Image 1 (cartoon, rainbow, N blue to C red):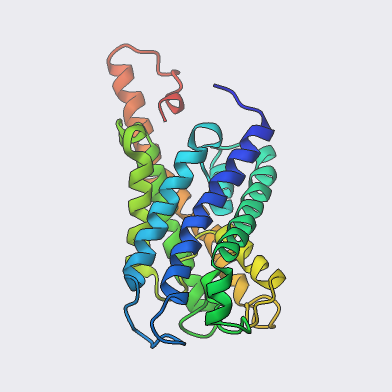
Image 2 (image 1 turned 90 degrees about the horizontal axis):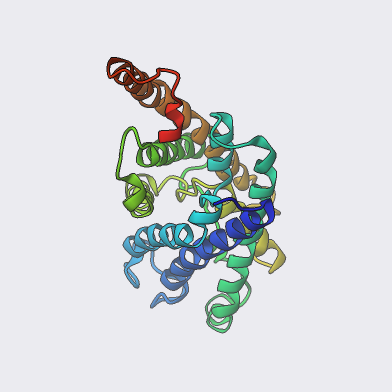
Length: 278
């Protein structure tokens, strides 16, 4: 099946919007329905951090269900850029995909705020302490701790996305790939979520953060001069490219060479394009 750029644009927009609806929605549930005002540090409320990691994993799965067939469900500018950098995706489509992802993330955040608006204003009437529902904030001050965290987390995400989707590595990956990617996101959150909130996605972080600015949230990490927004934008892009190239160098290319050798031994034309099997 072949789809137009416009159809792919809308699929990415809607898929990312669904991702944010479920992801930011679960954070809102945990934060603004806390039993104390403000919540006590470390308090388990509505499932607490466990719910957040599960919710974000299922959010990715729902986004994949929406957009997977038409656009491939990148839902993440870092993924789109890494796929283009490794020759898997045309550079001409990168900008439309990224624009769609940011618009979808912004709209998803706006809808979550609209749904919870009355409760939100009761919990934080001055919008002075809940901007973190929309976007990530560092546990440790400074650029490098969060940057390293985002590079590692997104490298894991990208490398595993390629491993799951590579037919030479996982012949049945297409049947359960969406669920596997959801589990990857859950695992990253559980293992590396504390340092900078495991954004691992520039649109997931900056899109809702932009909405928080428009909605009047204070201490939003964008207009307060802190520069917090830079890490979850730059770190994931670097991490995704690193993860993609590491996968190709140590797993993808060896698999392709082994496949070519096996085909040669069986009398199949070695010029056969193995990339068609990916």
